[in-house]
Amino acid sequence: DFNARLWAMSVDLNLAIFGGSFNPPHKGHCAIIKSAIECDLIDFLIILPNFKNPLKHESTPFLSDELRFEILESMAQKIAKSTNAIFYKNPPNPHNLTQNHKKIILLSNFEIAQKKPSFAIQSILYFKEIYAPKNLYFIIGADILGELEKWHKIGEIHQNARFIVATRDNIPIPSEFLQLKVSENISSSAIRKSTIQSKNGTNLADFNTNITE
Picture 1 (cartoon, helix red, strand yellow):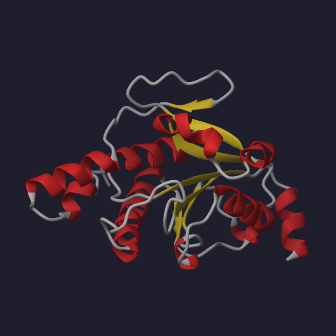
Picture 2: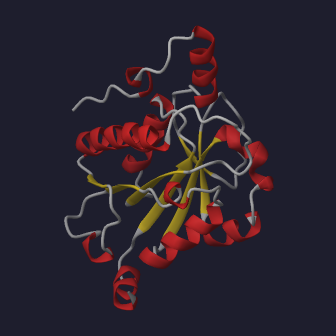
């Protein structure tokens, strides 16, 4: 509500959104989430799996929405525990964001629940309206840089958020982007291809992560 937004504006809240297909989630995603929540720039991290990437035309999903969300939930809970952050599966009230002076991780079904392809700008504006952050960041992998100009309303995205780019495969990152140092170079597409070729089916252990609790 209006009072909640006024309250949020009175604190130095830095919000970051990490969106993507996560199909499947893997150790590279885990490394990005962990690095992001440990980053001084970020107070509140939203993990945002999409229903379908509007730039991709995959006829058959590799993992169901429910299974992707389940794996991400397990992953996020482990990271929250290992970093002393607070994990939410439902959007927290703005009044609770800094109550315990801890970092916050939210796994959101906002895009999945729409059951249709959605655009980053819609989610950025949605969460900006709710939480009125001092700064809003959108996290992508370096492999996405080449297609960034194809994103819907990319100009408006730049007006409302600043990109943080996770390093990958020694891909050059232009100086105008913030960088997030990540050592894992695994990709979802490589996992899908390998799994299909091996015909071994899917194994949650292959996608999850070994976080020290």
